[in-house]
Image (cartoon, rainbow, N blue to C red; front, side, top):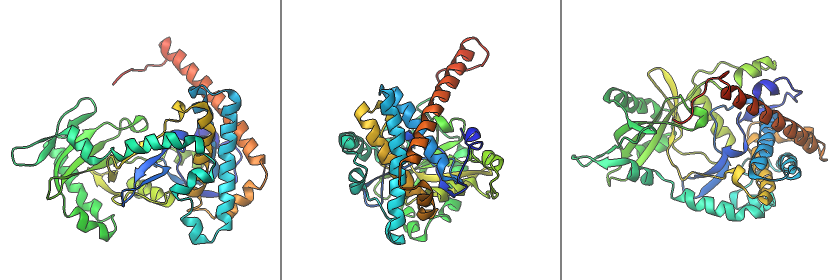
Amino acid sequence: MAYDLARTPMTRIRAQICGDAHAANFGLYGDARGGLVIDLNDFDETVHGPWEWDLKRLAASLVLAGREAGADEDTCRQAAHDAAGAYRRTMRLLAKLPALDAWNAIADEELVSHTDAHDLLGTLERVSEKARANTSGRFAAKSTEARQDGGRRFVDAPPVLRRASDAVAAEVAASLESYLTTLSEDRLPLLARYAVQDVAFRIVGTGSVGTRSYVVLLLDHRGEPLVLQVKEARTSALVPHLVTAGFDVPEVAHEGRRVVLGQKRMQVVSDILLGWTSVDGRPFQVRQFRNRKGSVDPAALAADQVDDYARMTGALLARAHAHSADPRLIAGYCGKNEELDEAIAAFAVAYADRTEADHAELVAAVRVGKVAAETGV
C-alpha cells in the first residue's frame, strides 16, 4: 500500500505516523496506575511521514473489515466516511484548544461520548474485562514451572514458545543492561527489585513472523513475575516509498529507538518500561509483555457497530498525529465541510476493491502452483 500511496497526491504535511494504522491496530493496554487506555498499539512501521497515509489505510481497512463482518456496502462506505469525519472534527477541536489541553485531550471516559460510539459500549466492556486478566502473572502461571532452587523457568510449548539456549539466554539477559540506560532514571529502582530467571523465544504476530522475539522472565522478592518482551526492530517498510515520494528521510541509528520514540510521540500514555537495546548487533525494542492488552476485532463487529468503531479510531488517529504536527495546519487543510470525508471514503472503497482483487489473484496463483505457499506453522 505504501508503494501506491507514494504515487498519490499528498499535502506534504508530515506527522509522526503509525505507518500501519489499520483498524485492528488499535486496542486497550494498562497504564501505570492499573487503568486501561485505548489507543494505537502497533508501531513497528512508525516514521515521520504524510498524515493522510495513516488515514487512508485506516479508512480502507474499515471497508474491508465491514465486508468481512457482513455489513452492506453502504455501511462499509459510511464507516470510511465517518472515520475521516471524526479525524477532521477532532483535529479541528484540537486546533482550537490551548496547546497543553490539546496535548492531553480525549480522556478515555470521554471518548465514546465524543465520537457518539454508544453502540460500542458493550463490546468495549467485554474487551476490557478480558484485558484486565491479560497479565505477566497469568502468562507466567501457564508458561513456567518451578525450579529446585526456588526460581522458575519457561516450559517449551512448540511451535510458539521454546526455551533459549544458554548462550542466547545469556546474551539477551546481558542486553538488559543497555536497555536500562534508555529508561527514565525513576524506573531503575523498580527494575532493581527483579532478578532475571529465564529467557525463551516466542513467535510473534503475523506482521512480524520471521523476526527474533524473546520473552524474559523476572521475579521480585516475593516470587511475583514480570515478563519483558525483547523484540527485533527492522527498518520501516515505508522508508523506500517516502524516498520515492520525494521526502527527506534521515538515517536511523537504531531501529528499536525509532519504534519506541515513535510510540511515545503518538500515545497519550505509554508503557513505563518501554525502551530499546541490541542483541548480537541487531536492534530490539523492549516492553512489558501482556500488559493488560486487549483488542477489538473489527471484522467481528455487528454491522451497527462498525460505524461507531470507525468514528472512535478516526478520533484517536487525529489525537495521535496532533502530538507531532500542529493541529492547526492539518485542520486548515481538512476544512469545515465533508469534502475530505467523501474523498477518503471514495478512495477507501476503491482500494478495498483493489485489495480483494489482488488477494483473489494471489490465491488463484497459489492454487495452480505459480506461487509457492505453505499453510500451518
